Image (cartoon, rainbow, N blue to C red; front, side, top):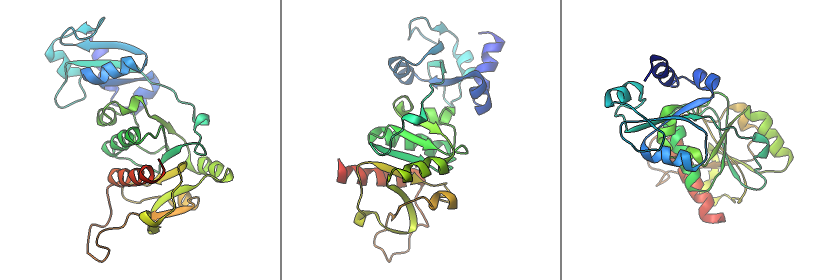
Length: 244
């Protein structure tokens, strides 16, 4: 490998570099296989064994130098970033997740994986949310990032447009109606908030259905709140249980 190749791959841990270069890193034989199956444009594959046709064979030591993981895998691919059209997101016809400054890469990766599991094809994130092509997020999605379209935009205009089209907008609040007693629809928007602050005031003003995931039993002292990825899983499961 050349020094320039190593420097570029290492630099792709930075969002600014990923954006400028239009590239991200996928690691592991299974994930790279899914990247190829999804027909994303693969710039180059590096492997310590002959795992993929056309891959450049490198030493385990070189793999350690370019890997973004604590334990390097046998293959790493440099892949072109896909581009998704936000105008095609239609919450009046499908269920859409909206993330209001979810900043932990592990949480975002888990939420993308949950969306894939529950058949949610679009996630709309605020600009300050974690980058879905952060190496930690890519690994946490377990390939779901290749099937779920993640968009970044200002949330207020997006939600205002949805409200004008009479799209129901659900959000989690401590003062909300218990999830299990709330009427749920098969289409619409589910808003999940920041790990520490929850849903921002500007976004909260556009939520039409405030819901609460109740603790059990209700009068028992418990944790202050649920992890945002856990809460997303509970809410998505209840939507799908009732309106499939």
